[in-house]
Image (cartoon, rainbow, N blue to C red):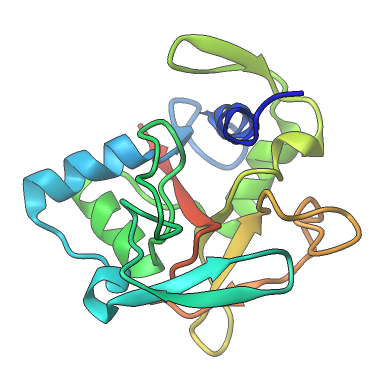
Length: 197
């Protein structure tokens, strides 16, 4: 059995690939890693919502979370530094938009996210390692992804699922599942992917 962190990296790799329905065939959907977000912060001195607030949510299990002081994208659980190759977490919609502005990319809509994950069976790559997308197991098991889709309250819709999800709990593998959060919300199981030309 793979150690927990290796499982999370494997699933993170599975979320990177080409988006080809409704978008340019040259666009890619890529998970933003801690290392990539770190470059953005180093160049811009950006301060995330969690850092400004001085606290954020740390998910303990599918139903329970704690509010922890001092957590951030660097230390998402408050006790150890995040691995550079892991998806960045403890970021909000606002933080994701700032990253996109800096990098010349954009966030996917909820619909674009699911069109990609549901229909793409081509090889996808990250760090020169290919993996075939073939089941919804590649969608869940990592972190929820921030999208541009909003509800009538102005909350943003999360796509995919987290490493805490299963069909019996939050069912992140079901595209009809509706999970919305405030635009300033960060969590240890919320990150983002970008559309890139």
